[in-house]
Image (cartoon, rainbow, N blue to C red; front, side, top):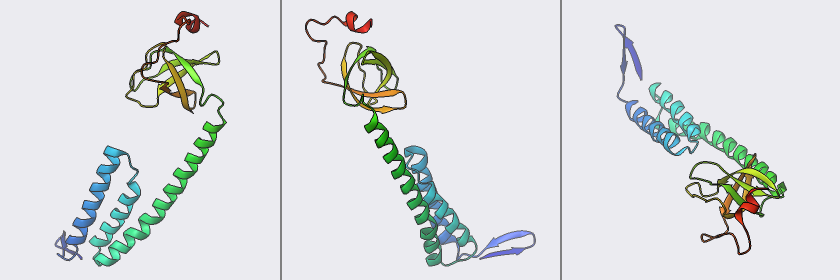
Length: 174
C-alpha cells in the first residue's frame, strides 16, 4: 500500500514482492523484444498493468489475473493479424509466375545485400534466401519467392556453373 506523509511517499512491504515480480517480467520480455524482435510488447503491457496494481496494494492473485486478462487478448489479436499477413503474402507469392523458375545471377549477391538476377529476359533485384550466402555472377538460381520487387533466390546446387556450350556474356548481355 502507498502512504503519503510529510511530503514523502512511503510503501508498505506488502506490495514489494508483486512489484519486483512484474518489473522482472517486464524487463525479461523487454529484452526479448529488443534483442530477438519477438513482439513481446503485449506481455510487457500486461506486466506494466500488474505492476501498477502491485503499487496500489492488490493481491498477487489479482495481479496475475489482470496480467492474463490484459495480455491474452493482445496476444490473440497480434496472432490473428500475423496469420492474416502470412495468408496475404502466401497468396501474393503463389500468384507470381516467376516462383519456381530458374534465373541467372548477373550481379553478385552478397550476404545481406542485393544483387541482380535475369529471368524471362528481365533483370530484377535479387537477395539470397539464406541471407548469409554469397552467390557469384553466372550462377543459376531458383526463385523461391518474391518480396515486392525483389526475387528471393537460392543456388540450384553448390557447384553450379554455366553448362557446356553456354557463354556467360551471351546470357548477360541481353
